[in-house]
Structure formats: structure tokens, C-alpha cells
Length: 115
Length: 111
Image (cartoon, rainbow over all chains, first blue to last red; front, side, top):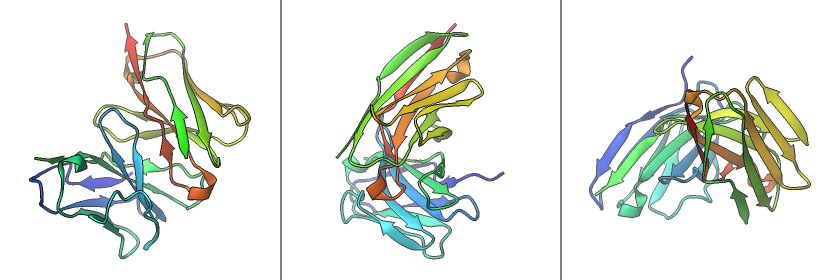
């Protein structure tokens, strides 16, 4: 069956450019998460949606980071005025319900490189 | 704050058994997940523990002690394809159901 799909798979941008990363969750999944994973580290939480509502954005590192999920399915993570420290893999995950025992299903991520 | 510790790297032989430990200190606790991540790929769900004890699933088992803040992942009959990073992750109660991950343990299986 279809899993979580992320695009693009790789993105190279110059410092100062804006980028947009897309996530297509598993159909019917209520919860959607964005994580940032630096090389050799575990994923770090960025933000969480329940349907179209952004319930937790405490992990977004600065106001340059913005996420949306307007119709409760596809989500976009936007980074404005990119900086070199934004280089990382950005992972999207979805789960069927919002309860804590639900496993999250991850996409392959977008590898972002800022030159 | 949240603190999750796992060994950085481990090496084991094909066919053997390996135990990957995880200790956590979190201000809340609602459950613990183990994920497997091959290089350049998505983390994939392995197991979930919320009660003390052992959960067995084929070649993989996971154990939890809530009172000790300790978990381990046990991999039996190791295969070369088990070479990957193994991530321990906690769902702290007060943060909803986001995952707080450890840095991961890189397991190398040698023949």
C-alpha cells in the first residue's frame, strides 16, 4: 500500500533562498508530524497537526520555519531565508489517530543542503 | 527536559543475539517505541511498550521497566540486513504524542 510520500527527495538551495517541502501522508491518517534529522542524530520534533489544526509548533527553530496542512491531508514545510544550519533531512510522519500508542509511519525524507 | 541515552555503536556477528539498551529521563512518560533506520531511508516501526515487561515479535523483542527508566531491544538470529541504526523514542505525556528520540545506535553485523 501507499506509504508517506515526500518531495523533493533532495533539495539544494543557496543561502537566503526560500524552500518548500511537501508531505503526502497515508490516506485517512489524522495526525501528521514534521521532524528534522541532523547527520548521526535522531529525529527532532518540529511540529504536529491533527487534521488541519496545528496543535504544537514548539519545535520550530525560528520564525523562518512555517508549516501548513490546509485541507487536513497534504502538508508543506516552508523555510524562508535559508541558512547553512538548516541543512538536514526533514522527515514527515503520519499516524492513524492522535493517541500516544499509535506508531508513526515515516517518509524517506527530504535531504536539504544549503550552500 | 528530556534525556534519552543509547550506545553510539555496536558490532555483532551474523546468527548471534544482540541487546541494545536505552535509558530515559523524561518529565512525563506515555510509552516507548523502537524504530529501525537504514542509511538514507525512513525510520520503520519495530515495537511499542507501555507496560513493564517483554514484548516479543518474531526475531525482535523489546523490554520496558518504567520504574528504572530503562528499555532494551533484543535482536535474535542476526542477519546482515539487520545492519542499521536503531532509535529509541519516548512519548512524554505533556507533549501529546510527539516522539522524543535518542541519537540512535548503529548496529554493524559482520559475517
